[in-house]
Image (tube, rainbow, N blue to C red; front, side, top):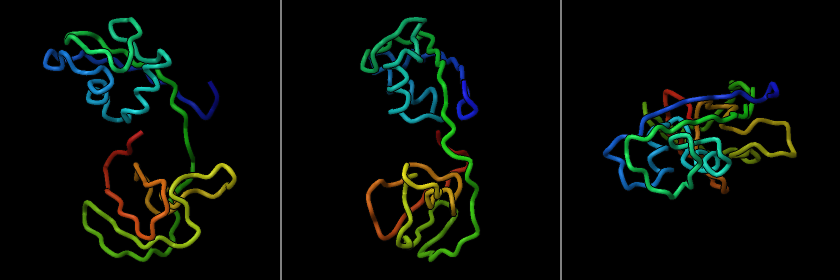
Length: 146
């Protein structure tokens, strides 16, 4: 394992009330700190097992099974927030809306070493749009989502 990765091992019991539902959907509820798409990829690579056996994301659960997650997390960035001027259009304890300065990216670009605006001005935000928009709306959260 490199310095840019860390391992996580977690287990959770599938509730009986989840019987008949898709494994990936139930897993997203059991491990809310990870996105459903990331969990689905881990299921497909065998990093997530159900009662010690690999299953498909769409397979239904019975309830009472043990879900085991053994995944390697990649550390995406070590950037820190910067004190930069923002044109704030609206702000409360839940939402921040800013006017996007020209030339700022929503997501990290492989060809540049600059951090995306989300890291530069609002550490801890997630699920940002990948398309170009002149205004960004950010939902504040207390804990970052992986």
